[in-house]
Image (cartoon, rainbow, N blue to C red; front, side, top):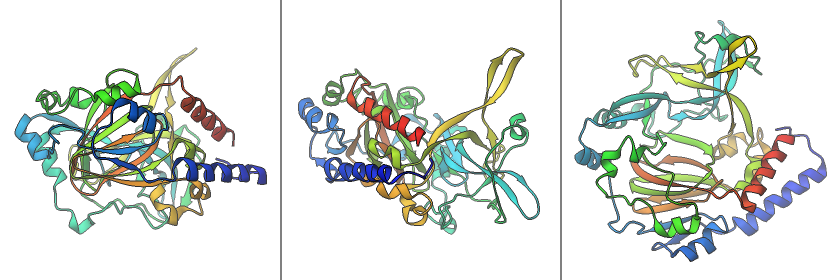
Length: 389
């Protein structure tokens, strides 16, 4: 985003920020002691696009740990697990393109986690490894807010063809061996597909009728299971879904930003890559493979670099990076802790950064959003305005 703007532009952004803060996000997230009826939910939360916490959303108040899951489905059910060197994947980070004895040439990329299939019991064992000597929190960012940089895998043909904006630095990236971080966050309706044995026990409902009626888009598109601890972080992003997130055990930490903050969050386009590692995930030999896709051309198929739009700065590091990303100070982050037995409603298009305060199991229901609304039109306008700035 270009930061050069007229005084009038700056005043307009200040007015937007003030209005959002005072009229839309000036209240604490509401906590309901029981599920509302569909009309109340629609009037007070869906229509106004306001998050809320709902207690006693499940009749049996389901409390479920990973041990309970294994007791119900057995130790050998295969999970597709996200693995990363430091718990930060699906985020923007530097990748080392070239190096010599004194310098690293780096580029910012959107890096996805490595995926590894393993029995659920093995996943539990890795999740619970003793990592106290490395610090029990996600503290892999430097004081300046940067994550460790990892080298680009040169076997990809595109690694020498793209023309990135690079920085040269004399500081070395940290390739010291650390215990890998595992997180079960497959999404894609995983509770009804990969973990169908658990869903078949009927401890979770097919849907929440009060919400389904209020959303007006039918049954949930996906029901997902999430298992991780405080080492895993999902960077700031949005979903085109109405989201109901129920915590079965542990505690989730959400940082929420309203859709109007789009202009302040520095969403930009980045090339995409994926973490790779050998068969031994404990080796510490991490690298990044550039994602590409085949494109039909007049001369046959060719490989094209895959790009995605993502938010670069970590909103929780605003004190460290605020000078670098000054518009963050106009945004409206709201930290919300959701404990076992509570369910958070995240309205569609709301940005959210997510982690856990301890080992946590959660289930979320994604309902399709309505696009024929002022909410989508307004957000789409902001997105186009952001690209023009």
